[in-house]
Length: 248
Image (cartoon, rainbow, N blue to C red; front, side):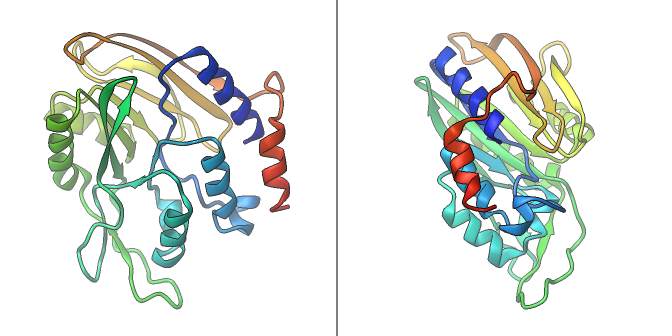
């Protein structure tokens, strides 16, 4: 995280308009500060880095509704999922999408989570999560975002196959930032005129960078990008180290 902070600061110095997004499974794990702090350290670190949005993954949902609501209140950025509901009420748990002004343009970001069966109830919880079919329940929100924004980004934790299936059914998505597959997918076009798609691995070892050139109509005229391995060439950011030391 401390090296990531340095990379992000360098990127913001280079570009005038930057969006910082996370494609899910950012708050829970099997070891480290994510586990011992139940995601609180992750949220504080992401706040320090000024994240713009994250989508929910299955590990995030493993915290349960009560803890996850606490993390959402602590976050200075929205949690997104257009297809995660509370089983007992059928109500969406998080925001389905958000519209942000980035460099003078309206950018819509829609969050989708991989389809899961009804999750087991956590001890002491009165509610359970249900993740519905992402294409069936996510598509209407993608279409709403397309009407409200010039540029639409799908922030997905449902895997490349479902990402591409949705892109084939709904035209107009500009970028798909994916997760779940734990793979590195260097930015590329899905089809001749389809969205730019990318993934940046797992465990926070890499950070993905996509540079977009947007024309007057709001279309992606050109793009480039990479997945950067956070090696020792990126110094540990002292502010981030100070923050993380509170949790050690």
